[in-house]
Image (spheres, helix red, strand yellow):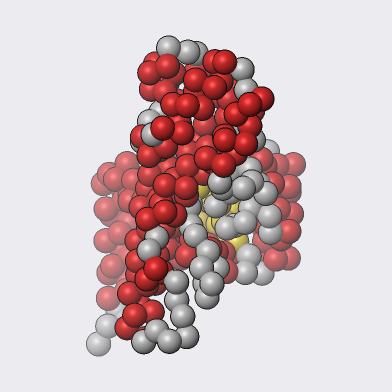
Amino acid sequence: MESMNGLARIRGAYTTLSKKEQRIADYILKQPERIIHHTINQVADDLDVAESTVFRFCQRVGFKGYQALKIALATDVVAPLQDIHEDISNEDTPHEIAEKIFTSNVKTLEATRQILDAASLDKSVALLLSARRIEFFGSGGSAVIALDAYHKFVRSGLFVTANLESHMQLMSASQLTNDDVAVLISHSGASKDTLDVAKVLNERGVPTIAITNYAKSPLSKLCDVALYTVSQETEFRSEALASRIAELSLIDALFTVVMMRRGEDGRESLQKMREAISLRRI
């Protein structure tokens, strides 16, 4: 699993880098917050090098590619912003704890927004819109996120499904085809249940979208496109818990774009859903 400390990786590898790679390293070390908002071609243009040179640099310092490096740098940049108020203690009042949780969630959302890759988002939307059937997969805490995704996308008029039990997931995955799309959600990207599903999907040639926190994870390698979250672990709260709000926000973004692209069809589907739900109101 990939360490998220990008600056430390670059500093540690600095003496082994070529002169050209050291120029890239210097550029990043001096202004990591700028890299978060730059595309790979912007960095290449600033340094007057080829995009392939920047890409190879990212791999040289231990990352899968430029997007993975941006995720690591986002964590490095956001983490120093954490102040003492994020260290929850037994002496904190309920209100103080609530404030710290809100602060942590806001930082998780901001860091995730900073590393959101437009090309990956566009590709994910295109896959969803072209799919005969969309199925959401997740295990443990991620199963709840998958269910929330189903709850949203069922309003779209698209054919969507979600199964929470691991055996049912494998059975359902075996019936999907290359006309369908599977969305796999896993914070670690290393959940055995989710990886087993991903392997079945790969064997079936099913297009796959991953939502995960780690760019260099088994799930990222197995999926066609990945959307990443960035979250920090605290003493009383794991990063998996902090990442949930970012995962939900990514799904909200996907749903909203899909609905807008569907135009009148999307509006009609949403209206049908609202009319059906209104029957439950007194």
